[in-house]
Image (spheres, rainbow, N blue to C red):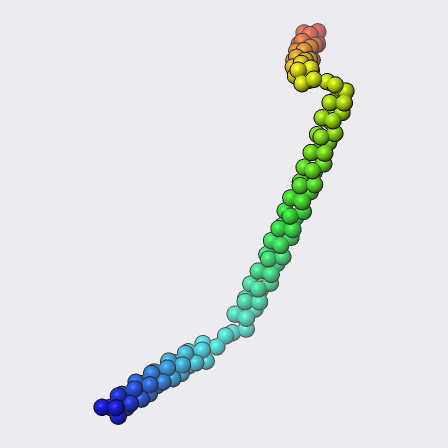
Length: 130
């Protein structure tokens, strides 16, 4: 019984080894019969150069994005500092928040007055030229 199992295992190993060898030979035969032509190599080289160029451009774009993001972060910090300084100055001067709201609404009203004046002036000039 032991010898039969031993021989059976050896036979299976031999069959596997033989089938692997046949498969390897078949693959090598296919490779040698389909020789790569120089035009194929040139095409592959051109493709590799194109891929390298694309990768370089992508890396440049990524670096440009990182630089822009860093600049935005620096600018954000500067604006925060300016805002804090403005609030500090306003508090030092004693300007209240209600006065600030009134100034903002006054600015909005002044803007409407300026645009309406420009519109009326343009209309009068149009009438004069016509």
